[in-house]
Length: 182
Image 1 (cartoon, rainbow, N blue to C red):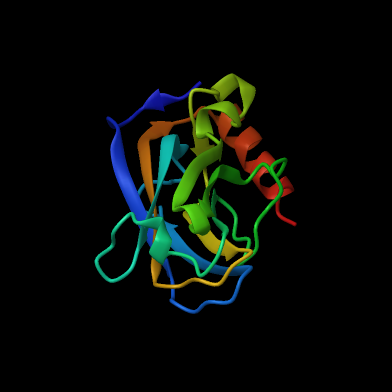
Image 2: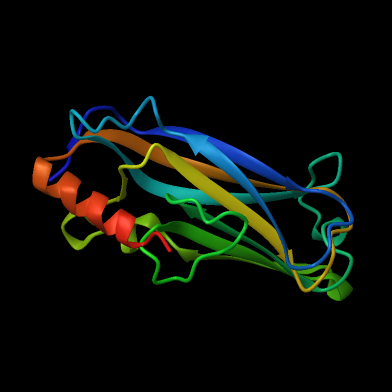
């Protein structure tokens, strides 16, 4: 089992999808965890929750009308293995969290959806959080079905803590993590 080394804290990363970006494009950002993950001591990062924030235009407003040129969606994934600028399937063990913002531009309506939460997709014995033993997490966001109208900033706000894992748990997570590397 995991033993907490710190209280909860937040990490953030933002990727900006530039105005005029063609539909079905993806932008990637990364979060360096090198200061928190230590193989020798069994130290890992436990991701407790992830929130995604979508902001559009130069004033970073939440007005969905300025985000896309037509009806469509903004989609986002947080992973602990590098997918490049692609998305991974929901059964990929490196998927920490994912979500989308569906935009009905014609009616000025949006609906936000978080598909995967870290607490319901981690290893069963450690299901209180998603355990990360890699030294980087990756944020990939994109626009589907429509081009962007204005710049769109997609931010992941990650609540996590540093934990110490036993050797068996560390190895199990490391093996599972590398098995997901496609």
